[in-house]
Image (cartoon, helix red, strand yellow):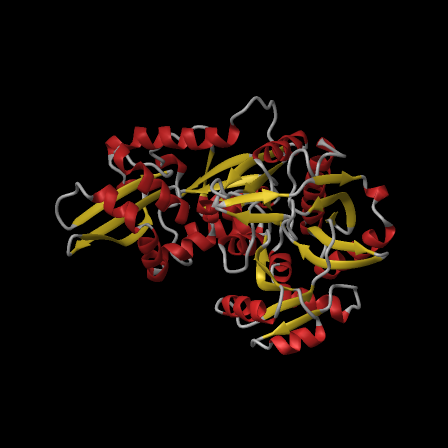
Length: 486
């Protein structure tokens, strides 16, 4: 990827930015040669980003041209918003108090150069602010009231306001920043940039560490620059061409917000926000399957505790589900009317609606992995020993049933057909459809937008080819989008 450093006047530019081609803002905005460039990252180091200034137009036009501006227009707007600044101050409060504790007085200015500060003790705070306000050169102003520090303002630094003795440090930080994106043994620039969203603290992530490494290997074989990111990289999304979410998703959650922003920025996103929205709510899924006459367990949507209705229509035992449950959390079995009343009351404290389903006991559930309307893997997930679910949580521990991978061409036709019908109602993303098969009948349990792909389980049949298939789909979508934008 080509790196262009855009400044107001290259002749008066005081900094040495290694690895970047320095051009004037006027040339970038008006010269047609820059309009048609592809695979470009634009480092906007103009003196001002105020609305209608040439610095503002550099980032705005970079976005329109399909370039990757740094900062982007959303960041420029965030820098003007006192509401955003206040929210960030509250979010980083603990770090702010810790970092600024030794500072005397009631006012402090922190200079942030590519996420770093000259004083190492402020590095963590500098980097955290940089992750929220992704601009190369920033100045953060803090005030102290009643012995508590607050972020008062944050804004770009004009180069003529940078102290002379800071300039060598900025050049070094810029060099280090560029080097991160160009590290490795590659002899040529990667075609596209892929971000894989993970949560290092997730105890049950959709992909284990070994599987994530296989995704990276498959992506790099297709000439992707691949980087693992976390929720702290929200403001960096425009640096990439695609986002692959390998963290448990939820609507009221940063995974959904990041998917929304990435899609808005023009990235190819799996899981896309619409799939997250539809799949994570079982009330919606129950209604959708019913409307399209796709067999599923007998289901009721309830808003009040009426055990007599449940006994009449479904019988006991029955299954209660919180609308946004996942990994068997928020899923309970009621054995009788009294048990139902107790558990329904517990779940209705968190949601005004509940799913109640007919209990269909099986020794295993089917999972069919589907990408872009095509099956890519099949698995049998067996129930935990002497338990009715795949996962059993007891005594602070989680016990999981065995798994058995099945080649796609050996999945029973009825299971495969129902899985494809259900997934196609959601979209063309990556889905895991859970089904039960009993006495020749097939029932769709749910469609998951963020299916598990773990080493030695879902990849047991295709091995490395499973990861290649998924990465090839990213490549196909990116290149299709690029062709449309030409």
